[in-house]
Length: 148
Image (cartoon, rainbow, N blue to C red; front, side, top):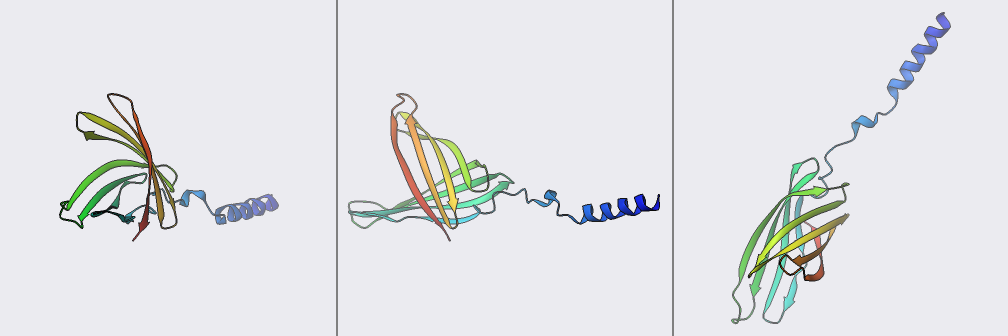
């Protein structure tokens, strides 16, 4: 009987010393949180760039505050800044984000879906969209952001 007790005691000691999978951090947003700089686009007479500030909402949701900076380098244009907030952006696996939004345009709305994939300090976002009234697709757009 003592032998069974000792075997059970040893089994309990070994089982309790094994690493438990319950220690997994449920916050899968941490790699996205921070500020991200978009690529600077230089055109004839102006330049623009979109920057993102990403904050955590829950363990798998983030909020993106997008700042579009239009900088006139010619008197033919006027500089401006436009902020857009996108809430409840889903983080699916710690490396991918997905969201949908509606962008009002003159007389219509563009339905935009985007997917972002993070690799180190680079976030690549692919956007697709279509006009709500006509269903006409807009060209796919890819933008890259670098974490600051």
